[in-house]
Image 1 (tube, rainbow, N blue to C red):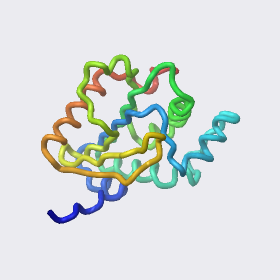
Image 2: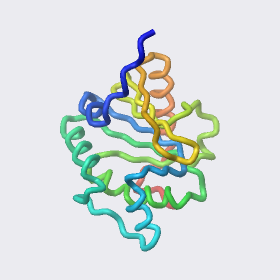
Image 3: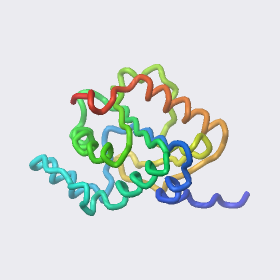
Amino acid sequence: MPPRPPAPSFEDLLDSAQQHALHLELRDVYAVGEEREVYETFLRGGSLPADDSEYWSGLLPLVERTVARGVKVRRARIVSEPVTDYIRFEHAITDANLRAGEQVRWLPRRRASTLALPGNDFWLIDDRLVRWNVFSGDGQALEPDHTDDPQAVKLCAEAFRAVWDLATDHADYRI
């Protein structure tokens, strides 16, 4: 069996979306290297990166461009309560995601107990391609994976919709 090609880049992934790009986040802590400085600054004093800062330079313009094409970009986060410091940080910076055109909802983990969920965070593009965001136990980002397997796509589509239906819109979610 030939080796699988690497997962598409995040930019290629969103550029390929025609209808929707759905993102489900399942972890309470991420230790992504490029966020470390901004996160530590937030913890020290609560300051947040400006929309035009280097921190957002890759994501926000890409989301804006994707939404401008008529693609719905939705992000759902399953979180433990009380929330971790990292989730407080994510909640605080989410207004930038919203300004870029994303829709964001939050679901307390306790309310997700009866849902069938995949083992990793994912992006689902147009119910045809899943990009798995894979992390180490301590939250470090590992090489992403992807699949167009119909069963995996179906699992992710059903999981995202179930979470979305139960979740609270960002504007109404309090931590």
